[in-house]
Length: 214
Image (cartoon, rainbow, N blue to C red):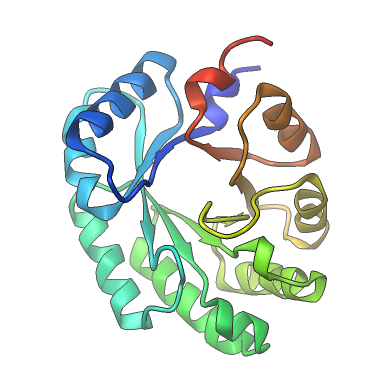
């Protein structure tokens, strides 16, 4: 299996430099990863660096807290796509989700999906902050809003992806909705376990080391 195509090669550190972003893109091309995942300010840079490759440009919206207004998230999305983003990873409004204001979450995700058009939309739900009921409700929101993926984590909370959550998502998501496991995936064994549990994409800053057989 071509595990490289599961990987969103990620660099979301606040102090990421142009040199580090260029290295990220070079690595992504070398290993033919599915995408690079970067902050919006680097989308155009990555688009230019990767334009002759098959590697996609992914960026984050409403990151990392998800509490921006819907209008702000929509502006970010439009701007990112205009700069060359192929995939959008948005953070759900966690407060709305936990307050069971699911209609608000669905409305926001739907609006961003409409803005994305045929571009891939992944919804980050920050599993470390959610109860089991919250996670099931997150699946309902993603299903009803017709997003393409649910994504476990930003990597900025106190926990990341785990097998139990992947299995839970697999149970409650529509068959056409995919799963991105992200946060704390550092070894090839962890990656393979996530894929075996049902993950379709792996978000990690350790993409190069994951390609090495242990």
